[in-house]
Image (tube, rainbow, N blue to C red; front, side, top):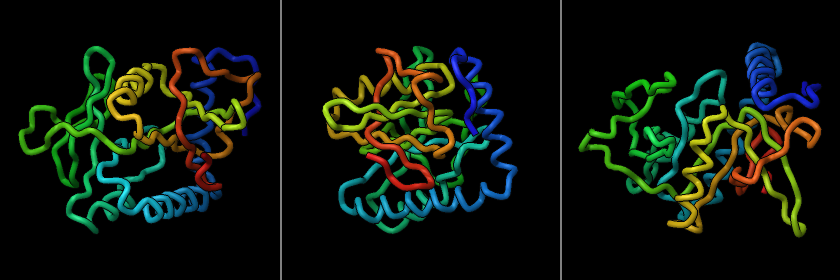
Length: 208
């Protein structure tokens, strides 16, 4: 689906979001969506015992909805927790425990967020963060692949990951997207301030 070359990130982002909206209405969307969720399920099962707190996102603009799969994962063992991001004024993210049915509040960008003042839902340090991608790319350095995320342009995740990785070097950051969203160097290249993803989860599987 990608035929964009040499666009600015802003134009590229707009085109990719339009393509995602179109893709979500096509017959091929449901099989791709189900395949991605199946690979997520496999990842969760293979990570048994390693993950206690997973940060997810509240889906917007045709992003893949991970909530049912992750709620089912959290339900199996009492210690498992899910967390949602809260956007601070300084453009960093904090994560707060989330359970189904919690009252959420809209951010300045219209994204539903946890209430940071809810005493029953404390702040959490995630073991794993699942991050939605508008687009993504892959590069290789020293034989190891690196995955990069094109997001909405606010820089929230890059700032947050820089901070969290210093506090928790074993933090696992996984991008969520489809294969057709992969960008080549002619379309987009990660900048020096961009934080790499540890893996990329698509309908084709977990790339790491």
